Image (cartoon, rainbow, N blue to C red; front, side, top):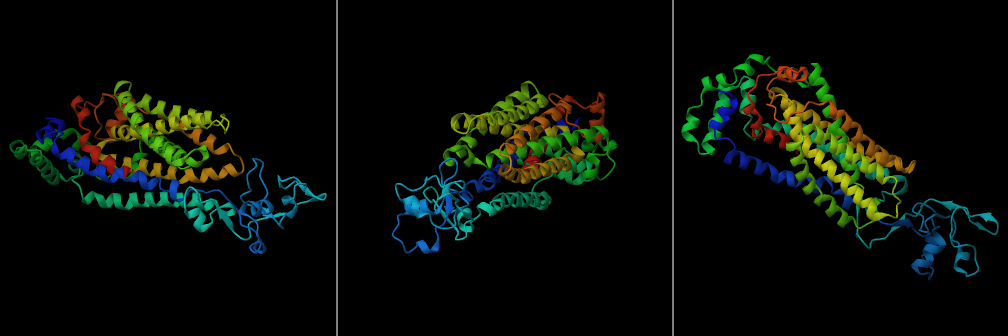
Length: 454
């Protein structure tokens, strides 16, 4: 009896699996609101240097105060981080010097001196009454702290995943296959009977015993060496190649995803609206990638999603800034492809790693995703020196990882590997002699995958 038949004897995909996944979906649904919260609480409002303290007694209007205090940039907007050393009263007269107020302007043939915002900043609060940017003045020389805050947050997500991921193992029933391979057959039998009882298969569940379990997992048990660690992800050639490629895929997917999703203000449109659009595009993207994974396979779906995402991001670099509609459409398409890539990652990685080390493998690639999310905000700082560099990096990373994914084996229609030897046999082209029916037993790993996602 193959292990798949043993699971069918416990009720297959029944009430237990449905309730299990549904309960896990509830906290997962709240993740996006936390991960993307900084788009709102750290929005950068229009700002400029506060007026000189000696102007507080004057009867100037706010517009006049701004005119004599702050020069204009090349786009005709007030400079954000500089002001005149002394108020330029001549700008109030009709026949005074040019009101452009740039650093190169002159007054009576002399250069106009500028200084930093020594008296703080004034913020336009028309859209948002307060953000951490206006509260803590995270602008100009302190603007990098905004990106650092997002990086630290993602670092906390990484630490939380490592700590609470292990703690959460006590809350749910472990995979019976994993328990059997970990030399815990009694617990495996207990879990299978509990699932059968929950699914309403009492009589069939009572028939499950150690002999049936050992017979179902004779091959897998004979190949188990004992305990496994992260080093086993790199110990053998096929596992090593697979882990390196998957690491690149997860890191670049998360890196580019948050690089796009956490910089909504650059599109020049209402960021509440674009947040809704960015969220809505995930739905058709995930539906499409699910269909393609079932028709053309996991590997081409993964490669295609990443490469198309990268290309759209790179094309956006060539679109003029004033073409906001075109830039937004390309960004939405790239975001959708990256969301689709995430969807493919979870299923594909779970099918590639063998049962005995699947938890370790999913934990490793999830950690790579967190690293990508941590690095993404810091890349935005390079725009201060080379404006197009962040887009080049965000677009180039998915393309490179999409190429790396070509070297992964296809898993569509293939049985799930149970041991590292199964993976090595698959990599060398040898048959692992696993029953095809095992290919449908994904419900056994869905809970673990969702826990790693959180």
